[in-house]
Picture: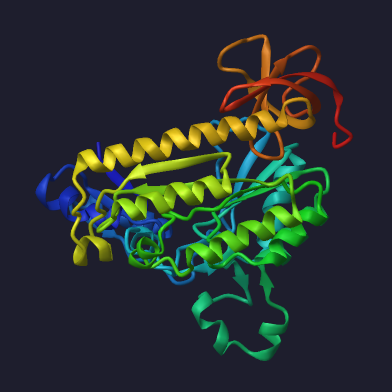
Length: 386
């Protein structure tokens, strides 16, 4: 048997796999899949095979993914690869490479293939979807050098989102992940324009402290972030937001931590992804900054963030009790075989009795009760989106 490791962590761990542990024969980075036949030949000849080079062009645009364990209802469609933002804590630019966007026509073709298979919801996916920019190919950083014709016909994320929602009015669209410094109000206006674009944004900030944002190389301030949130809620009052938050980043003071809790109070996220800081080898933070916050303090601050988020999650869930909401059925509830589960436009999980509905149906559900993470209701009929 020959053993290989493939994916975005292969480059960082290649020496450990091949030289120290000697546990694999083949190490393949995320952009080297086209070289797999040659690499397998190298292994068969008794040689270690490595290709972890990151491409400036590869977008997988001509690759039709095999959707293992798919529920047949919702699917991810990649629109960008890589990231240029170089946050000091993040290893993504080193494992995925520079930002490059996929031809919008190939995106629409993949969505159409999903539509023909009766998929009902698509999530447009990228390390930073707001940086999407297609001008005929090439890295985003080179856009300024493009011809005037290329610039005139370029497609940004707001335009791509509008194209998808317009062409497939019976499909729902989500996207992830956004970066506050790159998000424009054009995107929010497109979301407000289309009923089939879900009213939910994952909007990571990592910290509520300007000092920490600067140390993390997040290219926006606390004030700019809150202004963006204010504009989002003004344009789409029913919008729900979620967050990423890091507790105990290098040099974080109690005042910095309190700034994070204060920002959370102002935004009141629906849910979040919260972590205690840990170094990622190869990042600027690992090379240049001291991981100087004791573990017990990191854990305490993280728990305070989690506790506050749970209160806000319950607050946002209670707001929805009494409403009739459109829910896309994605499967059977984990807790009861007699209940369906799905998500509403705000990305909240909803459970309700099965009755005569089936997976893939859009159903109107009257929300009768809730927990911090789940809405509980009863179907009142089919949605007109079916």
